[in-house]
Image (tube, rainbow, N blue to C red; front, side, top):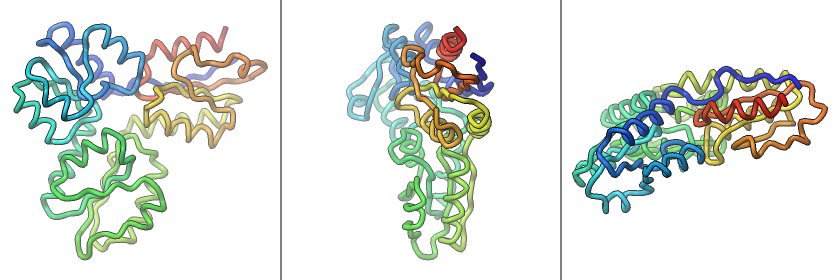
Length: 281
């Protein structure tokens, strides 16, 4: 069987930086080592770090009970209140927030302070979006669907600032902005979808159009992998979402001419190579 692997598959810059940071702290940091939330949405990596003694803090309540050690902020970022609590508890803070996410924090803090109402295009339950909201000086609104965009009513005479979750579907972002454009006389739109996400989605769409079977690899909770799956499924009905090589159904690949493989930003290269090898065996 022929296999075509997306060049953009696997760890993006921000995720690689965050994962490297945790391993560096395991080797040289002040223990115990914690991450605020799983460092990435990949169970294999998280389990490996847990075996090395890294503990996951799931919420502010858990954080408030910790009085020593190092807390690593993951690539998704957090709200300002988490930084304040880490300082209050006397803990060492190691910030591995993706620089592209940091840019959004600075933007929404500045624009909300200037009186603009913030609209975030993304998934309201995603940790990145929760973190962005935590830098807004006023109430932030989250829009994920065309229905929500249509129903959104900005405060009268209040200007808008529209940003996006970095891993959002670029085409969907443009469609939602077009709807929101009609809602305000004064709005600024900042396309904060990172270049790596755009490239990954564009390449995945192109490969899915060319192959007989498309395989998307990523953690079950990975938002950007789920979006890759949605994009590929529109172009290739035989698209499958797996987490590791053990999820691969070889029966599905029988008599397949060309197989495409892509992977989310939190998928280690080792897993991608294992899936590629299995497909070619």
